[in-house]
Amino acid sequence: MASIQQGQIGGQQVLILPEGSSRVIGRDAQRSNIAVGVAVANAVKSTLGPRGMDKMLVSEMGDIVITNDGATILKEMNIEHPAGKMMVEIAKTQDDEVGDGTTTAVVLAGEMLKNSVDLLDQGIHASTIINGYKAAAQKSIEILGQISTPIGMDEKKLLQRIAAISMGSKTIGHGTAKDVLAEMVVNAVVQVAETRDGKIIIDKDYIKLEKKQGGDVMQTQVINGVLIDKEVVHPGMPKRIENARIALVDVALEIEKPETDARIQITAPEQLTAYLEHEEKVLKDMVEKVAATGANVLFCQKGIDDVAQHYLAKRGILAARRVKKSDMEKLVRATGSKIVTTLDDLNAADLGKAGAVEERKISGEHMVFVEKCKDPKSVTILVRGGSEHVVDEAERALTDAIGSVTSALEEGKYVTGGGSTEMALAMRLRKYAIEVGGREQLAITAFAEALEVIPRTLAESCGMDAIDTLVDLRTKHEKSGNVAGVDVLHGKIDDMKKLGVIEPMKVKKQAIQSGSEVTELILRIDDIIASRGKPQMPQGGGMGGMDM
Image 1 (cartoon, rainbow, N blue to C red):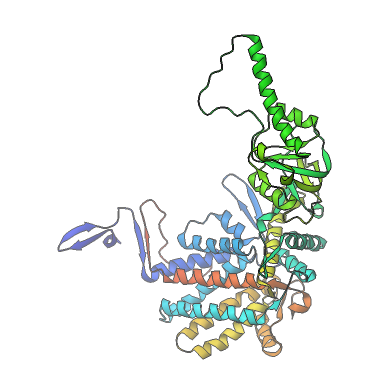
Image 2 (tube, rainbow, N blue to C red):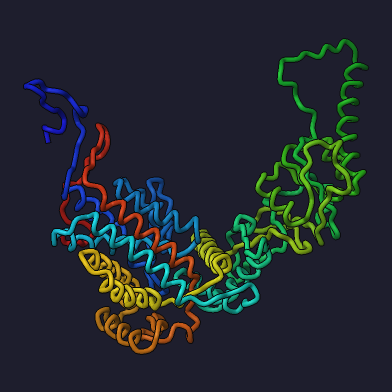
């Protein structure tokens, strides 16, 4: 490798890279990257499906995370290799875009990379493989549109099935809890959904997940309004107000200190009294401006002085201070109020309404519930669980379910799960490969085989024979359409539509796009140059149980 550090022109040595740099070129670079990609995929592969296993991740500080959420696992693993980081990016993109299917996307990418090794060994150029994979991905998305079924907001039972299936792989996704939480998720998503120009628009940020350790998962509840993790600022204030008229202010109810140094010279006790009385009068006037609008609840994004708290309590106004900006925006959507930045502009038209505002104690902490709002476009799900790990996993399960239901409504289509969709795509892609011909057909066939990793992994997770399962699935798909999949709960092949195992088309579409794109990106790399101080790149060789 000395030759990469320096070049030679006319007998003169020219330094190119600093001492200590490393470089991997050609097939070694490709093999190294592919090996890392496959290893990352293998790390999360066993978590796929309702019978998937969990991973325990322990940080340097000793913090423990127990989960089978693909994106969470890869994020907590703290992967250093550049190709590994690209695989982590797929999971992150999948999580941000659709909220579910993170493991599927990574496993698909790993299998596509693994299958590309055989093609490279046959002497097929990486560019040919990339073109074949691109064509296969485009054809897959086209086929998805053909085999999918429309769904709308009025089909709540189907949406609940989508939410339940999404949570099925998580710890809480079993028994009655799954169905109860699925109903909550659908109600929350439908509540915040808006229709613009005939399209359903859902902003997931307006479904707030507030988690509190203690109680049971079944005590999780949807609040038609906003839960503020703050307490009422003064003990003399009312703890519950019916028919609340809510003011939202982004201004401090206190005497602001001057930005420059200032000196107040007081020479007599009367002057000090007058100064303090003036301060008190200014604060009292602020409170009177709020009270004059008819408001009986005040949420302030900044501070509230002790004197102002006293006068607010005297006027019977419930107040909370230093409320987060994101919570203020949610309050706007839930109550119909407006945020004002100066008290002089505050009037009755700016106030929002809620059926009740109440301070309650949850797990030893005081929180303010703004609930019974009329048609709120922001809701809160209060997540409960017996321990911190249970609450965290419940939150991840609900996040996935919200993403799935949102994706189903925005795309307006769903497909069957249990590996049936991947199997249907693989069957059709094989026929498409013959039509394409040439060397690219080998890449398209490799893509089709990669898709079969999903039903194969599901079969393995419940103790079924993987080869027999794939053979049976191919036979059933050839004879009776696209709905035969792996029933992991009973360890057999069955009709997924009949069982109600359905998933949003958008989740599958995004997983195929992400997996294909990162595979193409990794296959294009034939040179890795690591600067001084960076970890050395592995020089090819096997990794992650893959024989290179």
